[in-house]
Image (tube, one colour):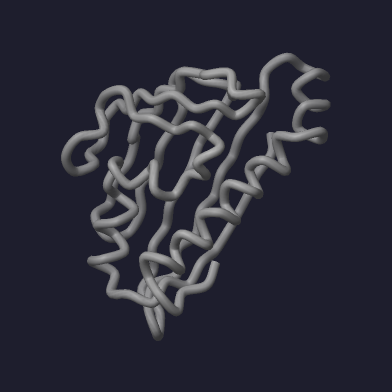
Length: 153
């Protein structure tokens, strides 16, 4: 299993940060345009446990992949978890944690994942998956600065 952990300091009140990141409609805003992210169903309204969100992404050579995630846990203003139900990973478990700190909110993402296809998945991880995930989170840091000036990821 692989794990990616990122942290960002967001210069805004917890209520604003929570409202932004817990809204499925903002997923497209924080995903690089090259990924071709588009919500197909389930992204309406406020996030809740059991919510299923279907979308397409184009992570490799513009080939569309349907990805379905379930919001499995939500503790208002503190954390939420999304898990893949259908998509490119064998396992995808993404924790989003929000902690009030001096000057704003520390947001911590913990992504635990495995790839399918045995040794081919291991090879794909080393060739492009690891780098692509880092690129996605680097992009998100830029977007955070746009929506929450003075923040750093």
